[in-house]
Length: 212
Image (cartoon, rainbow, N blue to C red):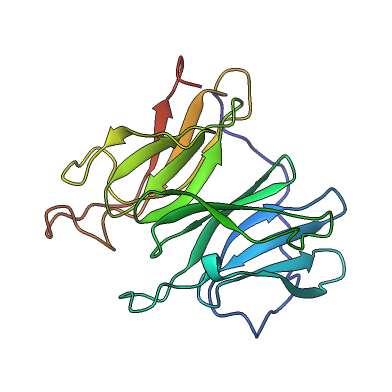
């Protein structure tokens, strides 16, 4: 596969400052009009941002999004994705994968609920069948969660160097790589393997042909 090239440099423009935010982290598109939802891991809320005007406000504030009491790091909601009118999100130190139905403007249509208690989770991606593929950062593991809530560790384990510190992921977008899950790693900076092993961060490509 040839790398993408451009004859002109990218034009980077600041959209907005959100000074009330604490730790802006995961983000997902809300609609085709330029509105996005942003997970604030430190404040434990979801912001809605209009990328055209720069206007923003808190869209969802739910207990399942808050940092866990007494956690060593004040990180709550982390990865977020929208699927079929539902916002799914991880909470890193509540160790949960959660969901909440949302309205078209991104506000909650009810209380959030826990799908599964699944460990110290970071970002995730959905496949075509609705399975969630979740990065368990401290466990060096790629986890699969079915729509019914069944969990399976697919790649790696706590003591493995195969996938050290997985953080974020995205499926390929072409017919040639739509079953490839690209995963960024932090190399174990947050949780070294066996307490000592750290490596350089990387982008891993996991072929999930036959599993998605």
